[in-house]
Image 1 (tube, rainbow, N blue to C red):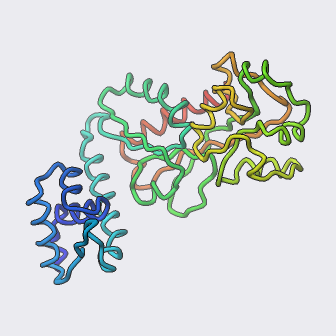
Image 2 (image 1 turned 180 degrees about the vertical axis):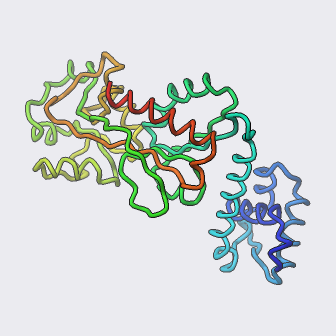
Length: 297
């Protein structure tokens, strides 16, 4: 295959077929006709001189070669998306699309008001928000900016610390009415009312640093979704960790064992090659200003 004649449309169809497992599913996802997707696959297989998928009663099964090509095709997809975002901005204006990656809580609870302010000041900006904790989003160009609660260790990234967010234990007023408020952390853990993760060890590790021996079985409600934990807390299902800035918005959330506090660092991460782009630079500065104010509130 000659790289000078490489057709991204063929590879895009290949990647979506790989994800969907059928020509029909890929056609729907790409908003193309079934014959068009079929033609793309046939043409790509002809260029490669081999078969990429084997038909089965349950759909298309990717060959070993197809699976080995997935990462490279995904990199092409990310590069194409970055090209579109970059080209969408006019050189003389602050405009274009900025893709931001953030954790569930930060993305759902903290960023929307900050992005609203950015949009008011820069109407030409558009935002795509991906809820993810992976630093690889920036390395692979899946995101222009990542908001992270830990300093990235990967080489080739620009990182700026913008503050710290204090986290404490909270319970809904309805839970406090139904149950006796615990006096010690040990009492809370043994009560079976603690909200925590299922497979993510973050809370257990933090509690163990406080000298507590905690297992998954000690959590009365378990979910690896931060938003599900927050919803459970607001519903009065138990006692859980919450960012103090978020808890302060809800008068029904009351602190439990207020002396127990953890601080999460807040970092903004981007790729060096994006720093000179005005849409990214303005968004970085807006996020830094908004998050710095949030962490100081």
